[in-house]
Structures are given as C-alpha cells and as structure tokens.
Image (cartoon, rainbow, N blue to C red; front, side):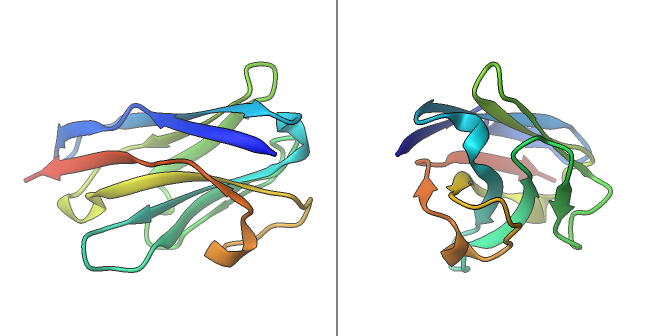
Length: 124
C-alpha cells in the first residue's frame, strides 16, 4: 500500500506556470505507475498525465498536451506535474494516483491509490 500527499496548488493568473508535487510513502514508490487527474466543480474526474515506473514513458491528455510535463524522482518518492500557460478552464482539484501495474492507464478505475488533491485556481 502507498499513501499519497499532493502539494503546490494555489491561485495563479492566466498564462502563469505552476508545479504540483505528490509525495509517496509506504511501499516502494518505483513499483507504481503514477498518474495525475483533475476534477472541476460539477464535472467528472479526468485524466491529465501519467508516467511509467522508470519515468521513461509519459502520457498526456490531448486537451493539455504541450503545456504539461510529468516527471518523477524515485529517490525522493515524488512525482511532479509542471503546468505552463495555465488557463481559467484548468481550474480544478488535481489528484495524484498510483497504479499497481507496469501498464499505462488513463482510466480513473485503473488506479489503486489516490491522494486528497490540491486545488489549482486560475484567474483570468
């Protein structure tokens, strides 16, 4: 089992950049495929980005591709999401998730463990 704690959210202006982090504790972090999801008020939770156990493979949502970089530091048990050129429609709670599989998934149901989320608000 792994515990996930997100941090780094906040209030930014449109066009700004922000990096959110997710610190993991518990079982070996490098054994998990990691993902980021987000949920805006009144909307379903949606996939944002994912990264393989080694960090070699990354996957991004088409809606945000080109503005995101997901990375991980297995020595620090942390996964990061760098977001650039933020837009008001990016406002949401951003969740970190861990998957007990080496295979990629963009599906909410494909992840076994979730953090509590961090709020990102982008003002226009």
